[in-house]
Amino acid sequence: MRRMLWLILILLISVLVGLQLKFDPGYVLITLNHWMVETSVWFLVISLCFIIFFSHQLLLMLRAITHLPSNYHHWKSRHTARIAQQKTRQGLIEFSEGYWSKAKTHLIKALPNTDMPLLNYLTAARAAQELGDPQLRDTYLREAQQSMPEAQIAVELTQAQLQLANHQWEQALATLRHLQEIAPKHPYVLKLLMELYQKIEDWPQLISLLPDLKKHHLLTPIDCEKLTQRAYLNALNKCIHHHQDPAINQLMSNLPKVLMMDPDIVSAYAHYLIEINSTEKAETVLTNCLRKAFHPKLIQCYGQLPGTLKQLQFAESFLKKQPHSSELFLCMGRLSMINQLWGKAKSYLEQSIFIRPTPAAYAALGQFYEIQQDAHKACEAYREGLRMLPECQSPPQNTK
Image 1 (cartoon, one colour):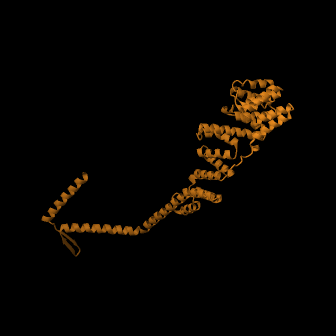
Image 2 (tube, rainbow, N blue to C red):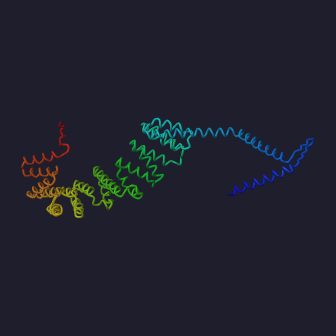
């Protein structure tokens, strides 16, 4: 609306000026030394307008000429940048399609004129890894860090990923520990460390990492529980394998509350105690756990104790609640043999095999018959047990 009012006002002024010039065109006299110019006002005004217009155009032309080198430089920069973008885009597409060599070539060629060299270097490093050239990969990663020092964490994370993928465990550990010093609570650093410690089976380090993994919610509660159980169980088995008694005691004393009744851990610990003839402690550990929760693995381990009549009576106390447990009957059969209760031993072992035949039950029955000096039945029981072992089972025959 305002623009319309201005147009109307200019039109009215133009009409008034035109009418005025028609009746009185005016007179202008200009003298300079011996020069004298006479003209009408309207001609002077039009002449001045033309002079101003052409002067303005001339100045613009001169300015364009003087700025020609810089304009050319800007045009060339934009042109080279556009070509670099095209090469980068092509390299990224080729990388996604699996053309590693072509992708690397285009990404590196685009480097001198790209405004984001970090992306090119990191992708080229991944391409070099796929081409099986870890030395070239590390070269690109170093250059990536030099091109953008503030992206050190991103570069080293990429390096750790590639080293893990290439099974370079020592190099990956060095990289991740350096990252842990720089960013001790970085979630992805913690996650990669978790993966690495599992690969190299460094269970104590994984156990020390568990609180941070839980704190940063890097695992679901179920996965965290599984990983905790796996880490402690493997750490315990490793210590048992190397007969590291102080480490075993320390590990069991620091065991999380949720794992104190874990059947796998308790049975492994109990087997170790039986091995080193600490049977009283093994019995205490197993009895405490079984009283809180019956588990086949624990009762099977309980049957490995140098049984007393009291132990047999404790095992028999589970009969009412666990009448279909083959492990329980095997345990009672072994304890009955130790206590020379031959009738019970035979009955329990045969019932265990009836519920679920296992090599361990047949082996115990073979021992029973061997003690009874029945060589034929002993051999038959041993043979049946051996047949159940995977390595003794013959592969299925192909029939046409």
